[in-house]
Length: 131
Image (cartoon, rainbow, N blue to C red; front, side):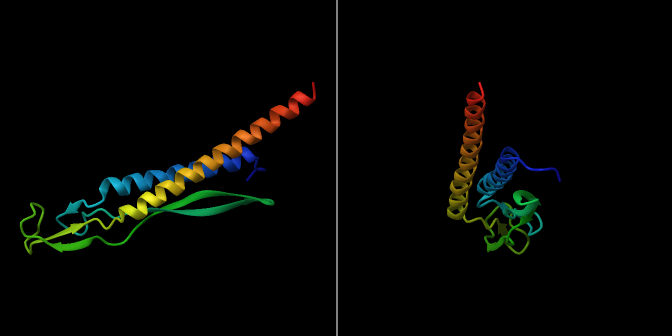
């Protein structure tokens, strides 16, 4: 890996937070969704991050997207997707936790935007001093 700049570090962190936000959006969109089989049911997505080192600097990358817990089995013979035993599988997504995750992700993203803006401002000020 080549030497990292503050822009590389913040950019990769922003990219990782974007993946995290997309998984949260997918989880919220599928919260409470039902399926006729366990295999067809939605499982919450969670990004797994990995630290990448370059000398004394570190940044983050998304290593993989992991599936969350198994769907919840509910007995509801009147549901249109119920199987022969009268069971449906409902996505196990905690909407409150996902909203907290979304807020935290947005803050992390905004922090990295601020880092990039500060670095840009410092570089421009330095260039102006050289005139």
